Image 1 (cartoon, rainbow, N blue to C red):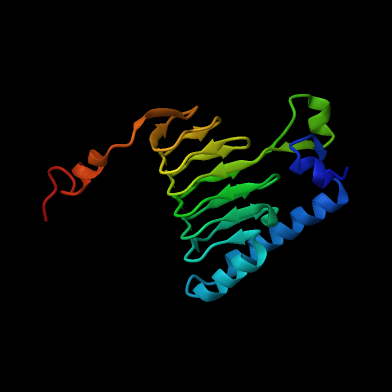
Image 2: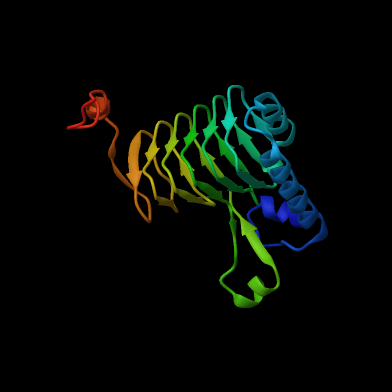
Length: 200
């Protein structure tokens, strides 16, 4: 079994192995090249992402800077948006559904390091997959670790650390991230009328 196959199986693998390291460096170069594109070069940016990512649907926007290793392990649905400083460490498969939005300074960290200090010193790593459903909103500064799934229509509040599965249709927050409550149709009422006490 190759080191790459071990990584995709969620097993320990040698992160310093030649093929793995070459793909990581190639992905670093891709991130570098993407981040050099001008914000007004929207078509070039879209073509670049479509060409290099595993797959991505139509109508997306990925603000810069954007950093990703193992670009081919990432699949994204339609109408995706990520704000500034989005990071994906894709040692395993990252699957993101339709209409997903990431606020600034978020990261998906599918890569992990062993507890054993000798294994860490020897460059051993592991990667677990991440699956994010449809119509999910991820608040600013959120970290999502490998091995979790987030259900459809869920909102993850800013500053959360997602270390276990979060079901569909809920507001979740915290470190570790936990379900706060179900999302209700009345949740947006206070936002429809402007900030309290503010006048022009």
